[in-house]
Amino acid sequence: MSLFLETERLVLRSFTGADADHLIALDNDPDVVRFITGGRSTSPETIRTRTLPRLLHDYPCWGHRGYWAAEERISGLFLGWFEFRPLDDASAAVVELGYRLNKAAWGRGYATEGARALIDKGFVELGVETVTANTMTVNTRSRRVMEKSGLTFERSFTGDYPDAIPGSEHGEVEYRLTRADWERQQA
Image 1 (cartoon, rainbow, N blue to C red):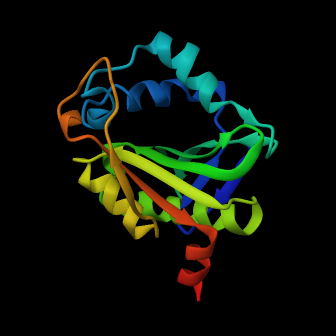
Image 2: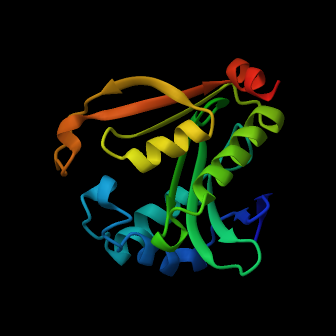
């Protein structure tokens, strides 16, 4: 296990092949994937052949990954994952923030705690200039995490998605935090 970051209550570590069962359970909870697949499950084969390899990808600009398994620090219980990855493999200037946590972790502040820690590490240690995040317009919980993490609303947009899901007719939103804005927040 490669530890990436620790907070008061969380450990963020590198994924391994042994995490497949955790990911299968996470992506087979209709509530967890409501705003991603409309609640449709992801097959174990897809998790093993597509999802897990994406989570194991090392970004050349950093020499490490951009997706992190999240565990409770005390119990070691798998909670889900955080994304903090460069949009361009060759540059850490702009990263995307994301998170997917199991229902037991909802409403406990874990998403905000992990997001804030990643943002701080990104600006202090990783050469990040801009953090961006997006979600469906109707995903109010995720939007609130973005706001509590210091990101501000940037724009609304619509995509051309072949498999529309409930709520997609309202489009998506993008939130953003620049290094300069983050520094102002720290003062």
